[in-house]
Length: 72
Image (cartoon, rainbow, N blue to C red; front, side, top):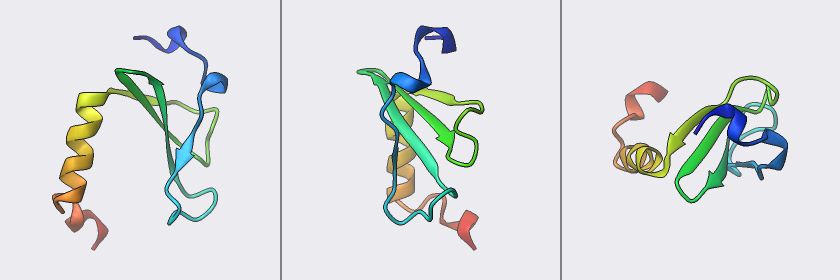
């Protein structure tokens, strides 16, 4: 999928409730197989697009604490 295949205005963006306003990573489901990620401070900036399998692997790593050292 390329950026031209969808419009960011068509997406429903979500953010974690713990995030402070305007300091968030937002995600949106593009379709059954694709998830877009953006920075809420730059909603018109670049998006990163992942397959659901890639995003699932990342979330699994977060849940397992594999990235906790980034927060220290």
